[in-house]
Image (cartoon, rainbow over all chains, first blue to last red):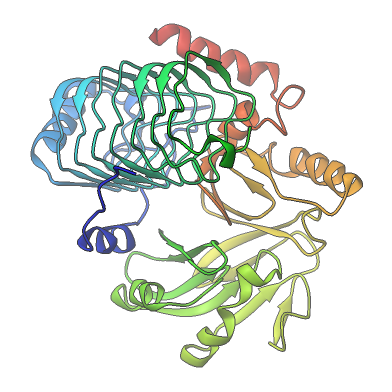
Length: 211
Length: 206
């Protein structure tokens, strides 16, 4: 395995920076989305969307710790969020284009039903996070620790998961095309009901995964 | 409300500490194993464990109770009266209790074991081994499996689809994701309305 062993201080991060975003739901009728940045509405139903988006972009650019934040249905482009710590945040239904997350630590974050286009997740440490239902295009997750994550129902095209530890990560009901899983730990990984085209499992323990 | 997740290396079970932002009384769900990291989560946040909720009595979810009783004086809630020799407050039906200042809805879902419970606290569901990301709990036979799937559909998939699901093993998920992508629950379970909503949502974006 070529996965880099992470330093001990990361253990501190994962055990001490897990809270949870606000569970208050949007005031708009028939909307069950969680409210965004201490507002009474979700981002989609907020009146000051531009203001909120600028605030969130600044947070992503400048803050090292992104914690307990809900920001769904937004679009982010051309950002460098390297070496950041994302914890207990909800970015469901967001679009991320040309975002560099490399070297970041992501714990208990919800990126479900997102679009990731040309994003870099290499050398990241992602745990207990949800990418379910997302479309992931031309993205690189290589050399990462991706343990206990939920990738069920994703559409992944031209992605690189090489040299990743995917322990207990699920890909059920996913559509995987031109995805590289070379030299990965697939112990307890789950590939049931996946549509697979041109995948590479060279040097990986695919026999240890559910399929 | 704050939720702290701890992975127990003994039994590979997820343990959750749920408390308020200010510290004080907290709930501990499924203490599979107590180690320094779990104690550090409790103490650093100024929590006192006032209640322990057990999703079921399997060893990987209960073995830490003994250690916790030496440190705190919690009330233990479970469906069954026998978890080792501990004094248990039994919960026999779907009900609501207040623990650590938080309202806890308790849902009885037999199948994985006869005593399986699911706890709903705010917008979080703690499902133990009943429902996990893309799988349902193991069962001793086909009859129990059929019963489990039927009861999950009846009692959990009808809840708000934006509820977060924190299982006893593996990654978290949401009810919506399980309706759509759990191979053991899909096909007939997803309502046409929800499938259309998701399709529309994706169509609008791409």
